[in-house]
Image 1 (cartoon, one colour):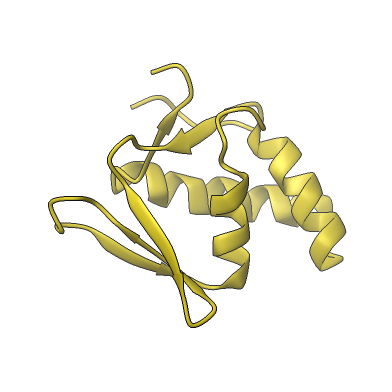
Image 2 (image 1 turned 30 degrees about the vertical axis):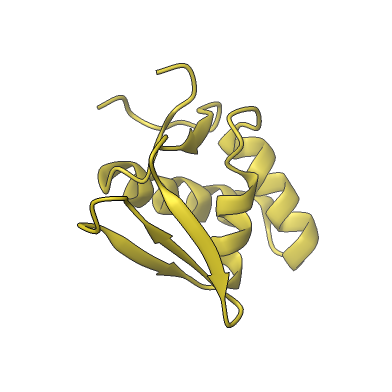
Length: 95
């Protein structure tokens, strides 16, 4: 697995299904082996993982929307994205 950096671009894995349920984003693989509920911030990150925006761009968006420090937003976006990638819920764009 490639290491994620600020310029990494992620997108949802092709078979992942997601829905918003009671204000929480729920991710599920079609085989049902991985399910993950995301809070509001996690759901916002998920919605920005479009295969075009880098993690740094996503962090800047989060910093503006949630009025947090951009460096902290980037650290959090990287950490969260590593979890999504490790669980097979995302992939690097172009792979």
